[in-house]
Image (cartoon, rainbow, N blue to C red; front, top):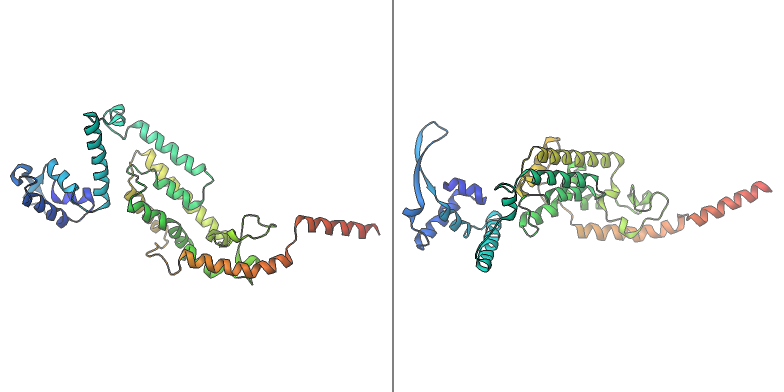
Length: 306
């Protein structure tokens, strides 16, 4: 494997690989002459060049030194193997043995397809379905920085793609105790029940019917893509799904969220709840319960009898 290939493997720049290889050789961790072979490669310019290729020992040594999410994944996996070997005296990949030497056998993709279809049919929120798809990644790690980043931004990415605001921004922009239903278009007990405090800090409760329809179609189309990947037996990593979501949004001629937005979730929640306290007084004055409506109907019937 060349330095460039190792850079792709561990998701770092080539110069980073070069730095760590030099350190490996300087520290006498490996003998340079024993881990390198020159191979003639034809470059894109059509010319042949002698290129250094490093063996597995060098690749593993670099994996223990590089500071990247992919390298951390490798070290976790390697530690598990070493620990198992130390305790048992051997290490066995049961799943790979069951699937003719591959973890990506027919059964893997059949199960993947079932998981994706189950996600589609679930009653989970729109953005939660996207995170559920992400969790099907072949290298899924809940502790990875990539996972934390994806989970923290996916809801805002979807909102931004639909109406150009983050979840927090749309709450602050649209909540107003002077408006009908304080700006909400839906809430848990809608349309006749009271608006509760927990309703006002949910961004989708402020979306128009058209915006909700767009959001639903966007997520449905993304689930179609996920199902298609499984049908075509294409394994997806965490990084693949993160890139795929951005590319998918761009393909629909919508904008990608570049930052965290101008309003934090904490500020949005506080502002919405402040507006709710003002609206609560108005709501209590105007609200008609089922009991109130029944009394009115009885009064009208009595008037008709007279």
